Amino acid sequence: MIDKHSRKISYLRISVTDMCNLRCVYCMPPGGTELSRKEEILSFEEILKIIKHGVSLGINKIRITGGEPLVRKGITSLVRHITGIKGIDDIAMTTNGVFLKEFATELKSSGLSRLNISLDTMREDRFHDITRGGKIQEVFEGVEEVLKAGFKRTKMNAVVMRGTNDDEIQDFVRYILERDIELRFIELMASGWKNMADEERFMPTSEIMEKVKEVGDLVPVKQRVGGGPATIYRIKGGLGSIGFISAVSKAFCSTCNRLRLTSDGRLRSCLLSGGEVDVKDILRSSDLNEKELAEALTEAFIKVTTMKPTVHSGKNNAVMNQIGG
Ligand code: SAM
Ligand code: SF4
Image (cartoon, rainbow, N blue to C red; front, side, top):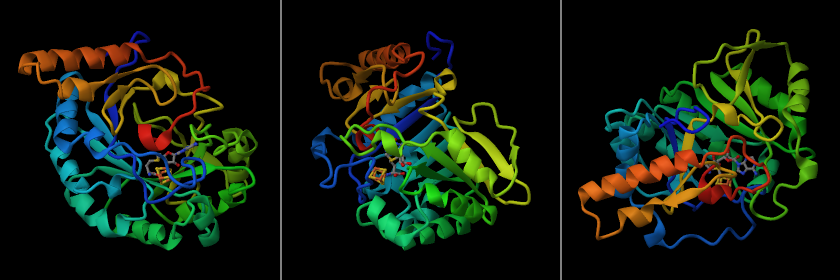
């Protein structure tokens, strides 16, 4: 699938649930969000059907996200099934890390290629505040379990918020100097939930970078083709690397190769703007035979691909736990 701006679409991000065990301040309101009814959430069988169809159209890379993917029952079995699909070269997962101590080994043996762990602070009390109740020790133990299980190219995502955790940028850098982890500093985006990510807390990559440079000189790392939206550096002598994702100050839309599938079955062209097609409706429509179903799914993928904006407006606020960040 090539979109109208010559971007080759090969990556599908799948939100497997809108539920989460945490309530991060920039992502969810304190009482959580109204959740989809169980029957509205795509079954594993439906997700696998959509992936297989995507593969026939050029998808070769999958990311599982949410909500929190590890709260979805049977998630490792979904991973195992996706790994078994011919044509999928890479399957990664984004998680808040709380359940990794329990799941890391099983995820590895299920064939998961890589993990992104979200962690915005190194401090116990702050983690409790940012996530509204989380226990940081569980994430640290999860990270060590991931490294022990033999995962490579593990990423740690930290959303930087002025006045909340910007004084920890250097602590993060020091943490990965001794660990084979790619730390990625992410700019705060406006959230679909009002006042959760206010403008005063936004900090641009340029400013984050200045703070990182106080720990050591940044040496650029040559990136793989299609290696993702971050620009990557190393600090001499350090084991890990550091990436910067400037989704707000410098949109990376020109190299965007992804579509998104929401937990309730909408195929979307972009996190922030563009359009979507309800593929759950297509899958559940009883009057389509197999050939008609395949044609309708192809049409949906092509339609969503053509809906991809040249550059996102940045104005729409993403409802992260539903679309999948
Ligand atoms: N629960 C999992 C997690 O936290 O990793 C997966 C879903 S979460 C929505 C995916 C990513 O979106 C996380 O790294 C989170 O920090 C990021 N995210 C959520 N809201 C955000 C916002 N307003 N600005 C920037 N990143 C955000
Ligand atoms: Fe949950 Fe991830 Fe959103 Fe935090 S960022 S509330 S962990 S979905």
